Amino acid sequence: MNTMNYCYFNGEIIQYNDCNLHISDLLIQRGYGVFDFFRCRKGSIPWLDDYIDRLFNSLQLSNIDITLTRQDLISIIYDLQKRNKSDNGAFKMIVTGGYSDNLETVNGQENLVILNVPWHSPATETFVEGVKLISYEFERPNPEVKTLNYFNLLSLNGRLQKSDAVDVLYHNSMISETSRANVFFVKEGSIYTPANNILLGITRKQVLGMIGNINVEDIPFDRLSDFDEMFITSTSRDITPVVSVDGRIIGNGNPGSVTREIQKAFQEKSW
Image (cartoon, rainbow, N blue to C red; front, side, top):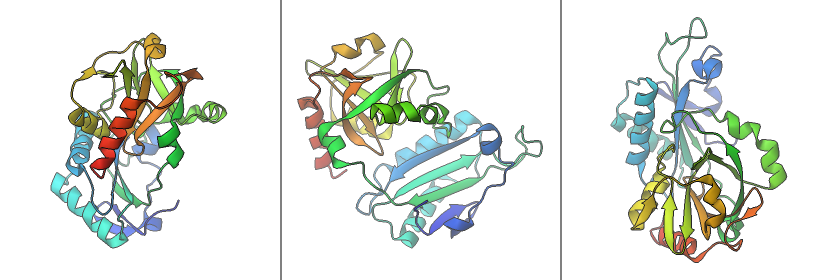
């Protein structure tokens, strides 16, 4: 993997190639672990406190403990940024369930890894022309926990490629989120976003704070064709228009004026 030279592993800053987990870790054996991901933008790290808070919330809901404080993590992150000279990189904090003697139960200390990786923005045309999604009837368990379980997304990789889609829109009777982003819709100038069964995205939080009068409510999946515009928000994709789902055109098939206004407002804050 293309990465920066240094990472953090269980109390030490080490070379990336020297960072290894034993096969007995419950992340490998049982998929038990959480993470968070954020970017460094032009030397600064916007909303770092929010990302740290979300990590600790995921840990609490997962019953995984770490001995480090929030300030400890922040100090490590800035140390890595300095050592790797990372002005526009990204960070991934991973906390695993720890090593297990019987490969089943929690009986060891958690493992904490912080990676600092180069950041490559999605293609410019995705922000300008919009992206396609596919849909999948699925509701993530424990949606407020940012887990390392992306089984459903990866199992749909062939369908994504065939559809030239960038992500999967999850739903049951109600729309929830994509595998890696929150979703917003526009109808006659009014903005809507799902209220339940979602990860509380940090970029979503900025949009809610930046744009007043957004309707946060349950949105039936069968309303998808009714909307004039759709966009997704995430750390990796910022504000990205969506022009179709399963080949079903949203609005007139082009990014709409409300989406453009929100993109512009986001950019003007140098985010």
